[in-house]
Amino acid sequence: MPEIQLFGLTLKGDSLKEEVLQCIDKAIPFPLLFELRRKGQVRYTAAYKRPSTADSAVWVVSGYFSNGWQPADSPRKSLPVVLNMECLYASLLEPLLPFEARPGEGLAEHILWIEVIQKLQAEIARYENEMIREKQFNKKIALNQTVRDLQTKLKVLA
Image (cartoon, rainbow, N blue to C red):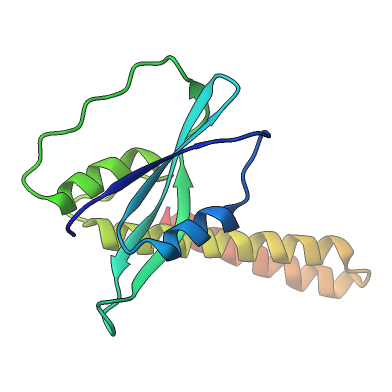
């Protein structure tokens, strides 16, 4: 990892579509950290980005992680003292991640674990919506059992 780039974006509205960040991420072959500003507030957003195992010229981008909106005049944390760029990248991404890393877990494994949890949460939401729309009672019972099984699986993972 030769460099990490910080992009500052000032928003005209209240939000920014993730597709804009994806477009910028695909155009620049280095890890990026986005600083989003709006009406006196600031928020940091980043995706875990790594070189592909099949082709080192291609970078693989995970989903985006961000912290909440904070006042723009809040003091910035100083950069941590680390030995290499990978450790710096991990320490910059760590506060943005929704779950803390398990002991002995590297950044790549931690991101994979978070993605599995997020996919499971999306699947639970999909089944819950399907259960709400379903008219037949016996199908609702089967969907409810599936939701409960997935929620149990989620508790074990989280």
